[in-house]
Length: 292
Image (cartoon, rainbow, N blue to C red; front, top):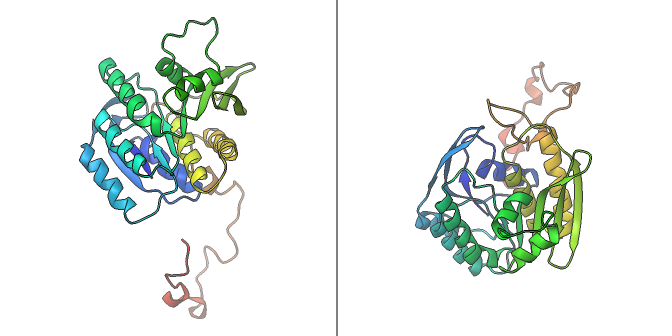
């Protein structure tokens, strides 16, 4: 189950969650918490749903279907955070992946209020906190005065103060045009991945990564394996990314579904009219046996 805002540009938000989680063969229960007003260049505003509407969506689905993991993206206001925290508390055995995006487009007072509520209400319920290095450092270590940026364990320690056992920190600058991501606990760095930096600026990368991670955890993968696979998936999404508008590029989360160049349709698949004897009847596809 994902709690996130609609993104009409298709870059992030629920659009990223649905496509990334479906790529990991997960059935997504998407709870709409509001909507961005944005294009591919920037976020202009956000409209939050009422917290009762958010809670009613989630609880109605939860009463019908079992859930293996929760993902929480940007939900718009402290009231929605409170409603979601109440739900995740009721399902204490279900892991929670929390993604914190860059909120610099928002009003400073709104950012401070939202982050304070997230610390108090959601982080104690969070299993894995996902975010960009600079975003998490500004939030969790605002008074850092070291000569170097905080490392992954230091960020994880700051998150652990609020009850978070694991932190996936992305966007560490590495030598030779590479970026690193680290999965860390307060005691150790559990996994590290290094990928070549892309020249394009992408929207929706963080939502894509956290959604894939959540789906893989829901499927039963251990945390380190899920993290490695989610990071590899994101790298492939970015490598196949495209620019649909005049702004930032968008990850192609369905890169795996495209036919390779030069692929030929199987004989008889197109351009041929089947004979009457070969046409299919509805009974050939009983509804209770087809997966898709």
